[in-house]
Length: 124
Image 1 (tube, rainbow, N blue to C red):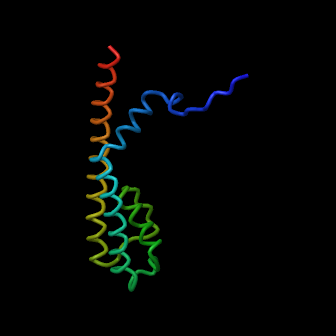
Image 2: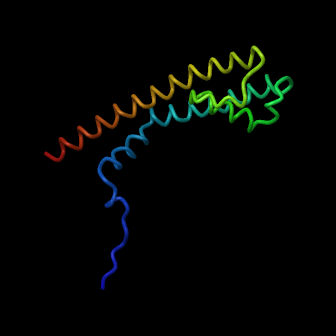
Image 3: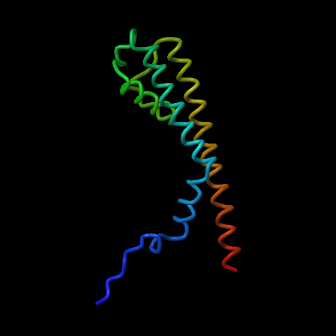
């Protein structure tokens, strides 16, 4: 009995392959890196502004939790800014989060559509 080498690429549906190819597009990588940089920088700024006055923020992990909840617009509510600076960071993060997520998704769909059209035209 001959053993075949398992090649995952042969078992991935075309849609998944196109999705993987789209995610590797430089503009989408830029959005992912920039979005993460904004999140981590905002968490650090929030920590600096809130640590002295906000009893719910004692370390960077607390600030990062708040930033992730804020940028994704989940707003879990266990940590909330109490300083004006913290609230301004929150406003910035909410607007940035919505903008980055929507832009990322719009670009992803656009790139996937273009790749799918190329795939369909090459099959015909």
